[in-house]
Image (cartoon, rainbow, N blue to C red; front, side, top):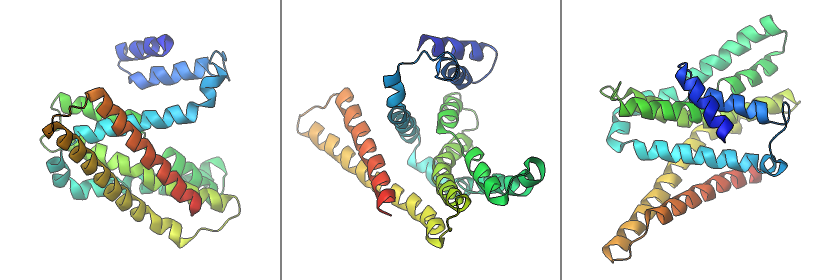
Length: 237
């Protein structure tokens, strides 16, 4: 932790994103360089990464106002798939000529490298919102909302292209599931959020005060449950 924060502070001093220092710390301390990380931590790394992503997305959702989302609705929808589509298309056209790979392999590369990392986008956009930069035209809100949906779009494409690269067949249903996954996630997430807000509000009106720390635990637990339910759905399919 100290190494990660130290390298993050150094990167901040030289005007680089703090996450660059954290990534370098992870590489240096990881099993392929110094191998100083506890194997037990590496064993639960996937779960830790998922919880970190959930926390980042919850922070983004809490920071966004519904009225702002209504104003950037159509551009946010376009941001969720247009940039990634052009990046993947660029790899499909150029990678076979430059790297000598097949079109399908180029599509897999494009799906991996075209993904937007919320760990990078969300903190930077929140900082811009705090500094009131671009907020008049809702630019930070637009980028944050689009980046969240972009991941779902790219993950489904990556799964489809990877299956094709391994000799499988792409199904039209896989591509049709992209808007369904986004809309279903919005509906279920909104229902859970409304239910939790109703629970907290009713408890407050009846004099049963719920501490903020308990509210945070409940919200994180609900988010983790929804994430697990999504995995079960893909497993059943």
